[in-house]
Length: 75
Picture 1 (cartoon, helix red, strand yellow):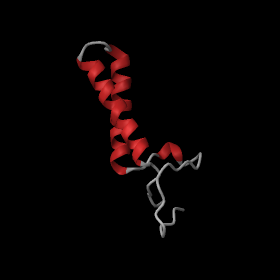
Picture 2 (cartoon, one colour):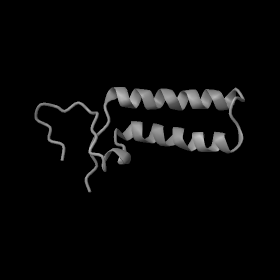
Picture 3 (tube, helix red, strand yellow):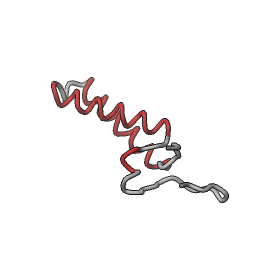
Picture 4 (cartoon, one colour):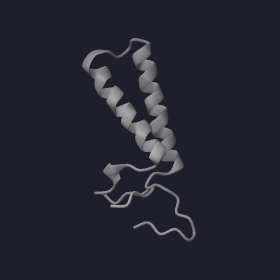
């Protein structure tokens, strides 16, 4: 399976913003315990998928929020 971009700039920006908000909530003591661990893992996933511009959860639904270039074909 070839990885391709299926996330656009807005999608990546929203994910990074949510990861930052989760980090701020954790470090300010608003969230803790199991909730903090779960949200921490989610924020790490958000950051990782934003860096590679690919979200595996989009594939089964055939979602693509990336901007297609004129000569780019996305399978």
